[in-house]
Image 1 (cartoon, rainbow, N blue to C red):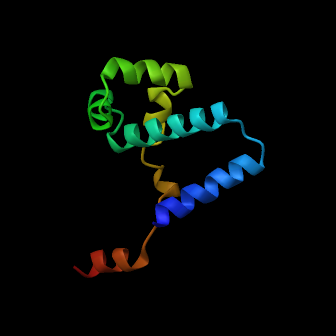
Image 2: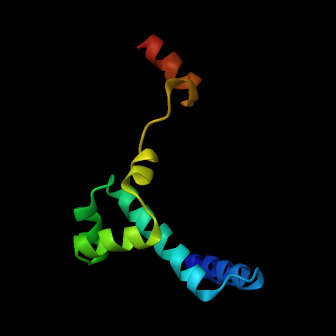
Length: 97
């Protein structure tokens, strides 16, 4: 039920801000495909299978929506060491063990 409330709220916000139906559907499709591709680490065959579509259909949809594998893969890369969170408890545990 929480998901339905969130979706209702999102639809209300989109409508009140003047987003047209075509734009809303396009953005939903783009975000959904991006999320599934990230979950499958950019593997189009696995992502397409999970969504119940042919890989060529996924590839065509990505092209229509301007979604590139480079964009998906960029979000999979680990941040540089300087930007990774440091957990002092983990570090001190490593020193003791």
